[in-house]
Image (cartoon, rainbow, N blue to C red; front, side, top):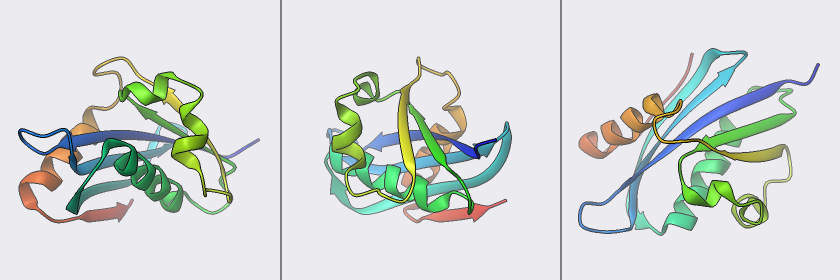
Length: 128
């Protein structure tokens, strides 16, 4: 059976801007929490750059032997298959899939982590 990581991703925009200042990740295997990341970005990033960085971070958080990383988010780019290559370009170690979630469908923890990083202005990463 393939080892699959389900990652929930949420971005936080800088107040009064479209630029991204922080993001949150929740990594789960078989419904169980495996890792979290509450990441503050020292410099503002465009949405596309922030998504690429967060997806690469999610792949780096996976446990050894993981064959597929499915990243779930409410970001509109996740609705369109053409975004997959653009957002995962350069990730060659693991198959990555992007899935769009309806608002508040499973991303609450990731949203809270992105908000927390923004308030703290620092990054926390933990494998549970």
